[in-house]
Image (cartoon, rainbow, N blue to C red; front, side, top):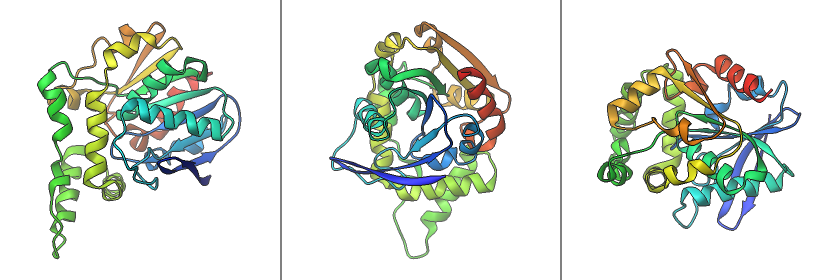
Length: 265
């Protein structure tokens, strides 16, 4: 696996590449994570494909941009990366916020997307909640102090919310620290502001939606909706992973990779 940086007008974008074969896979992460969430999956996918995982600008090791990006803006950076790597057409995989970016890439640049994989896609029906969700910071509102209590609070919050292995919590905390308050808000704002319902019918390529059953429970708990997403896409199938959480690519890399490879082959 190799690491590189792509120059853009708003700063450098960090990405990882491994494997070979066509079509390439382009992996997009959730907010406020990074390409780290695909580290365990990439070697499995790379046995048959070239795999590229990018840190969305503002996250991971990518630069912090001077402006707030919309989902449409994030989609443009995906195309920049594909152009920089001479990838004419790719299978685009998006997780949570990354799924919205993946949808927009397929809607705006249909000639560049061979197939689409959406992991835990969602939307808000309640307009007040839709705009209010972008303002929630949780741990991000913690102020720094000399005792480093903000670090413990962040760990406890991630551990409680994720209900996953300590090593995955640690990786999540590290990505949260890299992103910081501002980037976390920017990504959630972009996600909440995205007119997904209007863009979904423009997706014409074969699409796979992967749901973890724990992820579904979490979405129901906080008021996210998923009904109607699959119906809005002309060529779509759904797969549910028993016990899969919102950290599905980290927790279940074998199952995740198998679903993706079976679909694109």
